[in-house]
Image 1 (cartoon, helix red, strand yellow):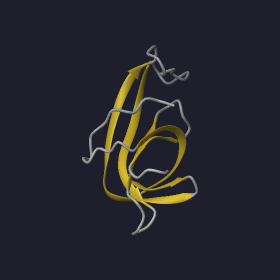
Image 2 (cartoon, helix red, strand yellow):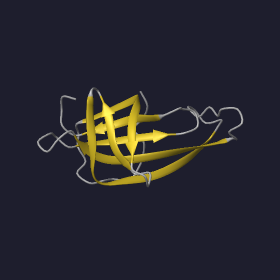
Image 3 (cartoon, helix red, strand yellow):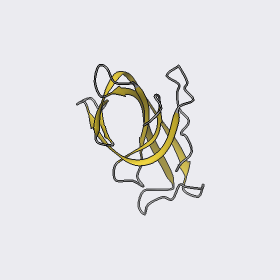
Length: 116
């Protein structure tokens, strides 16, 4: 597990939070905004406006091993968005991120209804 990524708040903090480090199968709009996430057998459609941010770490800091040829600074791109599987499903908030260490997006945090 990883620590909860710091990022902008979307309001309504919840104590029902799960910190993860799982591959995230994402779909994006042509403009590069998150559209949907496939997670645990369901497709979660993004609702509202996703929030994007990035952060950089030095390769020598813990958990920031740089890959050869990618320089000494690792930039992590992150998104926070709300999504649901259908009109009657609970709305969950997801944090995903990607950097040069991973081949794909990673799901780091889910906040919302209990029992997920």
